[in-house]
Image 1 (spheres, rainbow, N blue to C red):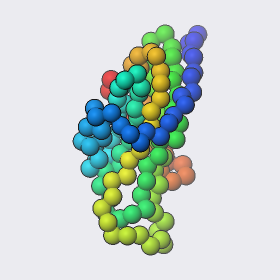
Image 2 (cartoon, rainbow, N blue to C red):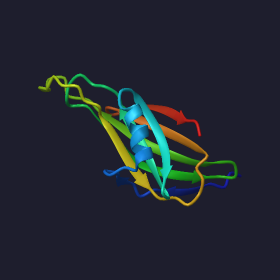
Image 3 (tube, one colour):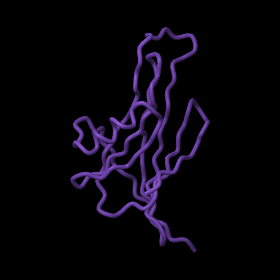
Image 4 (cartoon, rainbow, N blue to C red):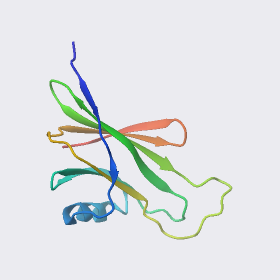
Length: 130
């Protein structure tokens, strides 16, 4: 029997970033990527969408939970993508959609799973190697 403990994380929008987190974000902005960075007792989840040629695109870190079992402490993150509607008017401008959320957790995270949702029901899973 697998004995799992699930802890839902309270995510906060991270607006002022420590330098090491800002450095990781800056390296990720021009491509789609995900990262988990630890700094000063906080964990930061970073999600980037890459360079977009128009306005209207976004990426949102919706929620996260820690799943602890006998082998791993896994952070599972749900991320959603928003695209401009086909008939919408958008500005012709380069944008770099990204989201950064922080949370506190005293333990060590050994695995990260990112569930991405595009539109209503397309889900893709990405793993971050720790």
